[in-house]
Amino acid sequence: IANRDGSNQGLIVQKSDGGFMYSTTDLAAMKYRTSVDRAERILYVTDVGQAFHFEQVFQVGRRAGFVSDTVALEHVPFGLVLGEDGKKFKTRSGMGLFLLCSLFARVRLVSEMLSAVLTAFCGAVL
Image (cartoon, rainbow, N blue to C red; front, top):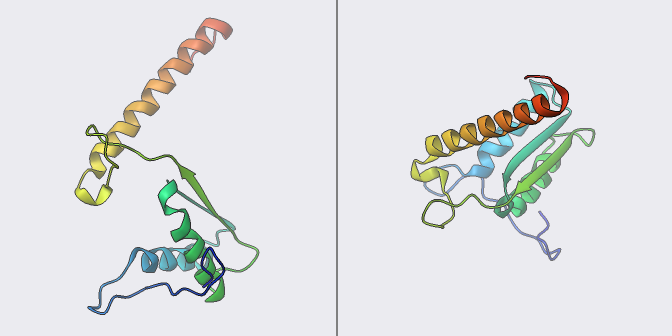
């Protein structure tokens, strides 16, 4: 695959000890979503630090024939999620449930705020 500077670079899909990489999982999911689910557009919503990973996976998926040119593959990056210590949040550290609960709380808060605004201005209640 092409690196950012245009030079060739490989993408590891299986380690020498037999273990698999995130790229392996992403490629398998891509193939499943297009062949079984018949997806026409696939969005990957992750932090901005994963942008190059998805550039590589998209290239390999297309070259391997897992995804046709008619399927849109899009990485939707967002900023980093930081823990209370100010360090980058890592889901592999077992904090995935904490992140899910935090996101749910934020969604609920925004929903309540929106409901209050609609009630105040429109007389509508969500």
